[in-house]
Length: 212
Image 1 (cartoon, rainbow, N blue to C red):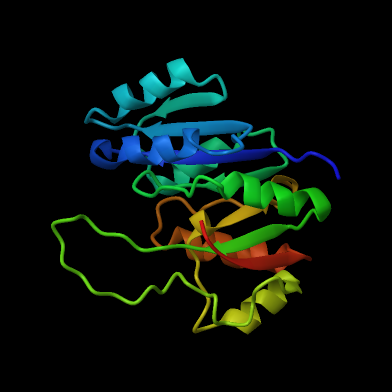
Image 2: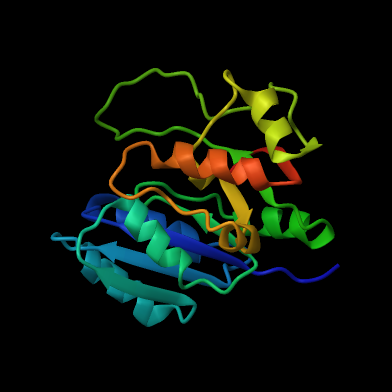
């Protein structure tokens, strides 16, 4: 069983109300990430100040600042700077379960999948009274622990269980770099494009019914 390295890319733009909870969930991992790349995409609130505080405390955090170019450009900039074998994406208004890295690394130590997909919980601001089905839960789709090619995964999931949030997976960095898979800049639904192209090239993916 070989050790495996995992990077995390967090784009940040004017999210001061959510950023501390997001970054705290990263630093409180049972097993830490090997590198965390925060891309400040021209924030005009106090997001940059919050980022700089974490950078000063945690040596595996790195901060990249750029003029506002959008979510896709921020993620692509982060991809240029990672050296880990695997990469995850986390939006700055989301947060991770504390055993996320441990669960994923345990899986990747035995088999080097091209990607591991997992599930998520939906949460809302306390002021909102919302009753909504958790569409990020694929636990009843018959996917759990099933090893598939990317194309198989797509055809089995689509359309009912096909979820394209890139924050709900860990990806093999080498495949992204070799196939030059980037987020389309200046377009909406960038996760759809990235996920579809990645699955086109992936030979071995797996889904785990864990809400991470």
